[in-house]
Image (cartoon, rainbow, N blue to C red; front, side, top):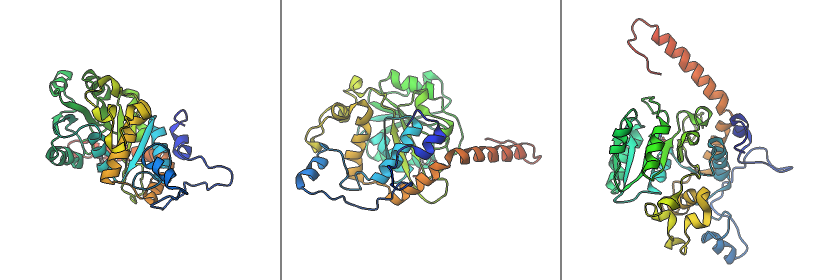
Length: 320
Ligand SMILES: *Cc1c(COP(=O)(O)O)cnc(C)c1O
């Protein structure tokens, strides 16, 4: 439903009830799903058929809310995670492993900085941090032959610097790697990073999307635009057979629109299990329904607070 206005998608995308079906997204609070035969289950296990069998991998409630966020961002595929931390970890670990390198803006959430600079470094992934306002030459200089991605926040938490998405995307693409943008702060109501060249978007849904302080969560959305096959040697995990799934190749089987998210679900959710509770996804959906109204009010409140502070004799400067 990405052709609709965001306010329409916030209400209707991802789940369209049939006649007599529940108006709200049903909370499918079930670990497992029943099948009549072992063969039917086996086909699901081997990614040969589509369907649900175990909530760690996929769950209808989670998928319907992911589909809503996917429509809001104008992507081709999306998945929910149990937190924003898990979303950013998965987004990068899906395409970078031990021995690889990532260029990241230094103006990012503290938890993300720690994840990258300390924990992922322990996993053998090196990060080079660049100022969000760096020149294109400085950005260029950060790349290495083993660079696999560029990462930044559309509006940084808490610095509030605005990422020049076009500049970062241009440099990433010139080096044959995708730009991953954490779009938590603007939300797709204020910014849709795919329109400016980003390839993958992440979210902490915990913040404005949920909006009621009741569910920690995250999301990853793929634009489907990055051509993994063109840089196949850089991204063997997407372009060569996965032996843990009987040798399927993600780009071949799921196309450019589905390969990245399917791989993240099939491998990273399978192995790390950062699955959101269906109940939490339901809460995120309740939040999404009013997102356009709430961000408008957030902005009006922020403007009023900033103007008050800016005119206050005891306040030296205001950043907003
Ligand atoms: C909060 C936040 C995160 C981490 O998300 P959690 O849901 O707390 O794990 C990541 N990025 C940004 C921009 C955030 O504000």
